[in-house]
Length: 377
Image (cartoon, rainbow, N blue to C red; front, side, top):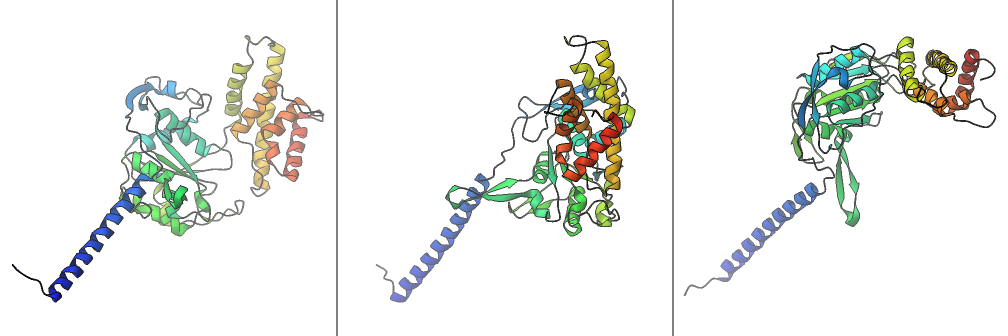
């Protein structure tokens, strides 16, 4: 029978304790990784879309120039829509040239981003969301500022019960992972040193995400869209907080300018809203009232354009009325909204747009309305 010396027993005990500690640390690390993975808030849907073909004229019914009647597009149809697919706005109005560029960008294999430049309320973000909604594609929007960092775009940790932390994926992460669209708004307000970190992912290269301790490879259908009021040269004094962006970053995008709708197109769009809400099936309809509403539409568009020009002369401080605002103004007027002591048109104007302005801006906007409508406004 073999016996162990005291020195051998001591060595055996030290080795056992060392191995036990090593195994314990390894198991604790595995458990911590499992808990971290289980804490992820977003679970991608396992339901796959069905590819269906739809005529472009059926997808984009309100548009300034009708597309080819025979043009057919392939879109995703979902039984259960995953997180991120925008809701379709049925009466959304598209511009054919912008729509063509955006559609080609989304449906074609590209290695660059899409940059929309334009003033307040021209519909830069909404057009991306509405195209995505009709294509059945996820679209996530993030608004940038001088404090936005590259890692913020991938997500953030939030505290949970029991002192644990939960990682919530950001829009950029989800779009890269699942093959969707990420829209970064006000990109010219973000630090150039943080933006240039996006350069590599536009070329399809993997990006390391420290929050998940993993590499993220961009999906082949991932698309990055950015919007801004300037073109990133930093020479437009109207927009405070924007700056000059890195030339290498800017070089990785195709760029389009998004302006307000031409007057006749905006009028035609509002006329479609009028025809839906005030037609011969309406018990209060009469041809004289219809002509009065048509005249009102022309005046709404004239006032909106005057305020848009005024916002430029006021160094971009006043938010100009968007196409959505003119639509609300018309709808509220048609519904008969009222405020004691005010005309219906003025009440609708305030509720649709002007109550968002400062007192000084609101008074200036009302003066513009009085110039067009007269003292009865």
